[in-house]
Length: 407
Ligand code: PMP
Image (tube, rainbow, N blue to C red; front, top):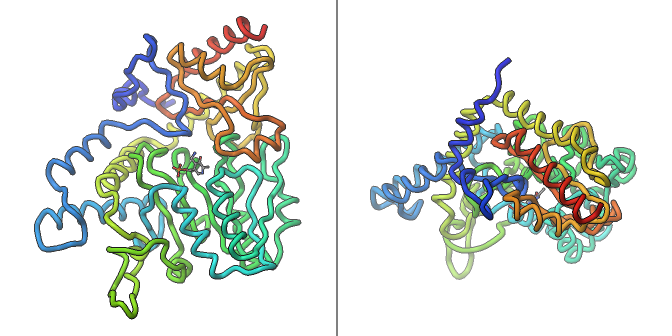
């Protein structure tokens, strides 16, 4: 059958040709941040060379060019996640800021006795903003259990969901376990209780087609930099009927309709949430990243990513004492592990000497680590530009480390 032209794809990512400590780079830290194709670098460069000015200020041609590029990127994002309108697409600094906008905005709706439901596998970005809101309002944070395979325990979810649940906020995909959560079904159940539904999509958008209308969520957050785009920009999708009642997050220029010292009125959606000069070149870069992704064959990408994860699973037995965190059947190619007798941070340092980049530590998910009785893990996270040979290199390096330091 058809396969990805991996050499051609790798040639699109200049950084993959780097040498690290004298060895060819093996970049397996894609869940932390993905690398950028030439298309993204060129789009941002071209924007700065030919079109840069501030946006929405009219008056001159460059202002028009910048505004057209910036608002065009918003339309690209809208289509990418199948939102109904660009009024529902808010630019943010990333997933973290998007979740903070929602959490702090919903504070005015919450009071003592209300409940906010998150899960035990959340990134700190989907825990801490809710804890801060609970502190302000007296609402209570409740937590859906995770089972030993690293899946959300659906009994625990249903037991804790009730008419006091005002918000359900969960990861679409776990950044540690790779688990793809059954969010479509969970959202339907939460909405039946009148809850507002929020998805942390940071780890989902790089790996699967996301359709916010099909998911039927109220909010969906993601970051550009994990999706081949630049850092410094991300997206908050908000269902218009809910977003329009959310108060602004910051005040300043761009987000107002009219300012007097007596009273200020907010700009229309989505600008009400976009105080100050935005990340314009970054929006242009994200648009290029999405267009690059969409130029690839999704089915082939998903098959290639699945093959990388399968290869990793097959090779686990070659490293004595290796255990995997997250054995769900339905997962993206994120591979967290421990090796008996080796500290995860040492694994990271020793692999780096071989040019292999992985992430180690708690992955901003300390409650999840505690759930598994661990203080940290090593995590290899694959992208479609990784090769099976790179997975083999990872495992032969790990087997060697194990022999030398833990054998
Ligand atoms: N949620 C998840 C699941 C993540 O993986 C990350 C990034 N590690 C974030 C939220 C935060 O994203 P950012 O740092 O880009 O705001």
